[in-house]
Image (cartoon, rainbow, N blue to C red):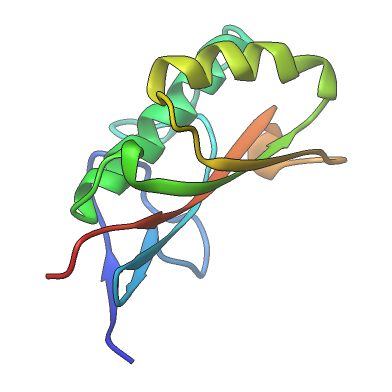
Length: 129
């Protein structure tokens, strides 16, 4: 197994015992991103839409650091503080993904790190090194 750790300053640094992403062969597992601004590590709080924008921007930065783009993402898991945000997630996600869209699951959860309203993780497949 050829495993490599992906890290970039263009996304928030890990705030726990995990890596931003791990690549095994051509598959990259992108850790969940919350709406932290990478430069300040402060939460975006002005609106749910702004939180979602920051999350997908962070995810994009990690995907690029791994040698891919969001077009290479095959599966997305979205965690929400409230399913009432689902329509906004669809609107924001459409700014970052185009057809064919990745597979997706979305769940409402009781609480997310730093009281975020959204966290998104992904699985991506990239070309061989």
